[in-house]
Structure formats: structure tokens, C-alpha cells
Image (cartoon, rainbow, N blue to C red; front, side, top):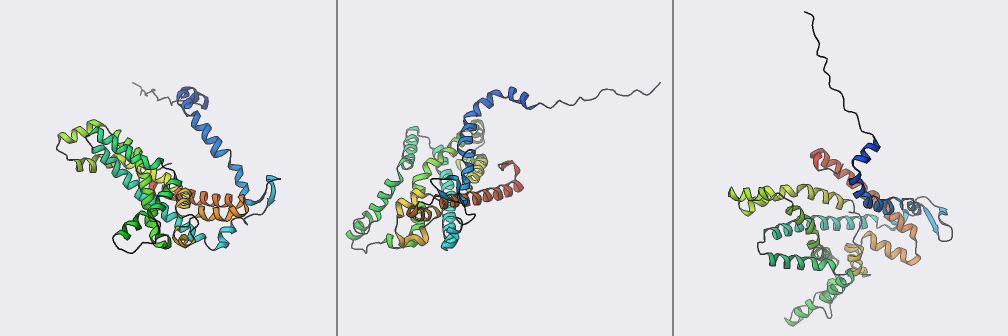
Length: 318
């Protein structure tokens, strides 16, 4: 008898072409078209405008007809001697906003989820959202009426009890805490929406099974809810770190204004550039600062994403 060979072989699957994938996933592509158009128009089409940062902009000649001056616009911040202080203030404030803001948002989302009274839960959600919809200008007015030395509400109470008045607008050291508190008061309710939605997306059967097994509320939070929120927390932190060099201009300008006594601890890149560029309307300088912020933010996101990818690739952006 001759040796027989198994002639059965696995036929490799033919790789689909580009147009075949387009036809197969046409529904998903159609759903993505609005987002693709949005990012193309507002993120990619304006990219040639980066050239403004390297020219001395002339209104008559336009962007590409203006005189090329290289990195002179970037020297504006460096020569001012404040680049390090401005960058430090901007990053430290944003770190406080990101870390404390996300922590409180997670806590608020978990507390809302644990509430049993539906009416109280809805009222609590509404009250938490309200500060977010208050204009930054109005927030500045409220803060001024609370802290004003002569007619402020707090100083009125202190004076009624015979205590010495407080002068926060002459003390730069108290404002890092005040600004963080004001930001958290205004943003925490809105930021908790994403985490609350993520909690609502957890399989209810897992929660019910844990209750049957005797797990209390703290155990459910620790072993089910928090691990389920981990991907959401990491992704939101990565996105937030991308804008860590971009300050909240509305918050700082409307509360601090042009009070030079507080600049050491409250001046950020946006407020400094605004004061400097409004004197001569130098859009090239503003564009250079925006490019600087974008590059630093991009580097930070890449570094943090690389670290996360080394630790746990599943939670990295790419």
C-alpha cells in the first residue's frame, strides 16, 4: 500500500478590499459622516492658519502674503520672563481641576446611583446642573459681591460680629484655593453626567447577584462599580490632559480681571496674552501661543498614552 497524503488544506481567507468594506459597513459610515465633516471643517481645514504664527500679519496682504519672521512671535513669551511662571500656573490649575474635578464627579455619580428616592434624585441632579449654566460673567459678579472688602457679604458678617474684615483681593495666596473651589462648584455636576451614564450601563444582573450574595453598598462600589468605571476614567483623563496647557480664560478673567496684585498666583497664559495682544491686536503672537499650547498638550498626551500602553494596552487611546 502506498502512503496517502492528506490533501485537505485550509484555504486562506481573501482579504476584503477598501470598496468591499465600504459596502459592508455602509450604515456605520453613514452614521459617522456628520462627525467626519465636523472634524474636517473645524480641525483640518484651519491647519494652514498655523502659518500666522510665523509671520508678521498684515491685514491687507493676508496670511500668506505677510512677511515671514520665523520664531520671533514665540520670543514674545520667552522675552517677557514670565513663560515659566505662566506655564506653571496654567498646568497646576488644570491639574487641580482635572484630578479633583474627576474625583468629585465620580463621587457624585456614585451617590446619585445609590439614591433610592427617585424624586429626590431628580431634584438633586437638577440642583447640581444649575451652576454649569450660569455665565462666567455672572459668576464673577457673585464672587465679587461675596468677597468685596467694602460691601461684600462675608465682610458684612465679619463686621457684624466685630471681627476684622478680610481682604482677599489684596492677598494672592488665597486665590489658588478659591479658584479651584469656584471651578468645582460650577463644573462637578455637569462632569458627573458621563460617569453616571457609565454606571447606568453596568449589567443590572451583576448588581443583583452581588446583593443576593450579601455584598453591601461599599463592597458593590469597590468591586463592581469602580472597576467598571476604570476605562471611562482613563479615557477622560487622557482627553483632559490634552488641554492641560490651555487655561480657563472666562473663569480667570471674570473673577480676577486686571488686578495686578494677584498676578503672581492667578496669571495664566491666556490672560497674559489677552492683555498683551489687546494693546496692538497682534494676532500673530496669539497664534504662536496657541501653537505652543497645542504642541505641549500633544506631547503630554503622547507620553501619558505611552505609559498607559506599557502598563495596560487595553486602556490606551491607540
